[in-house]
Length: 352
Image (cartoon, rainbow, N blue to C red; front, side):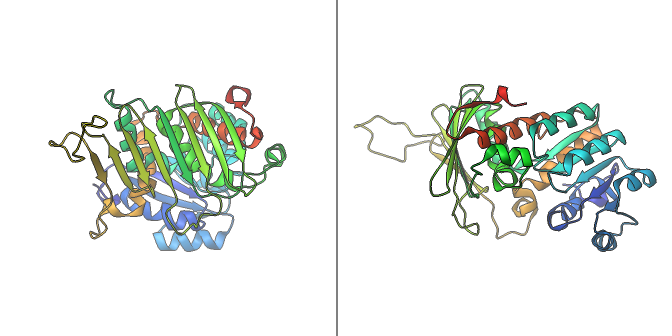
């Protein structure tokens, strides 16, 4: 592990948006990344100045155009609203900058497609932190092994607000809603394991909860339960991925259980703890009695992972394969299909 002060090569970055999320999560994560924070831009100049003083940054701006004209930057981190991301990302691409942006990347799928057209050879990674969680990467590793994968079916449970009933109006007016703001978390998690989705069916319950059925292009099927009403302060997020003779569970983003089964014959087996070590369950979880990096939320929640991956792609001049705009486009089409479904099957090929 290297810290910012240890890296010989760094990328010069500007931060656009110094609000609560950026202040609480992104700025602290920079301590572990190969970056030099060169400038901060925010419509609230006082807020930008306050953050700049704390982090020893000289360049402070209200307008991105001024920041790009006055600073020598390699990349920009965008942490603003999904309504503002498309315009700001395209502006940064035009300025020749690499772009990392927070999720959601936009309010409509076609806006992501427009960013893809503007990106050219620049690196762009969208901050779908669930994709970069250590627990998620382990599931992908397991299900990529021919002995256990590919994934056959999956279940996600995620606390969230009601899915808007009038999906067409929500899309037309780009109305902020929790299905967009937070629904992209479990959707990105499930697509990160299962791949692209072919069709979506959204069922809305009369008591606000919803169930979204995801039909994946590779034949896998998944269900996502939007647990409206669950206490946000208690662990309600869970995932189950079923493979070949095994399944993997993620609880509260952290606890990962790999169930491999035991030697078994119905009506004959008498011992649930058989000899040997190549069967049964393997469990991974943080050990919070140690104040070390692998236990910190910046690392367990995927925030460090997504930013480090972006920096590595820029420094190594390679195209990203995780959190790409193409992946973001797939996520946004699932979002739109969920709004339009009304218990009817919607093929993603019909959404552009």
